[in-house]
Amino acid sequence: MVGSRAALLLNETLETLGKVPLSELLPTLKSLNNVHAIIIDGTIDKSIVINAERSNVKYLIGNDMTVRKQETRIELLTNKEL
Image (cartoon, rainbow, N blue to C red):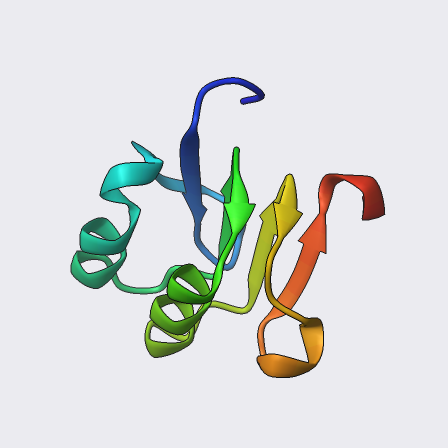
């Protein structure tokens, strides 16, 4: 996924629900149910975290992040931590 600027949305059994460009992540997230984890080729920012919280996402994985882990109930991970 590196270089794709995309987001991969997974359900609880880690099956792919969809792969979308980062620019379409927020509207797609609002339209899908049961998103358990999101892997993004990009930076996890406050907007993504807020919308993921609203959708009850449990994990966000990205290249980097501009939010602190203590600011959310979502488990935030970067590629370096995997």
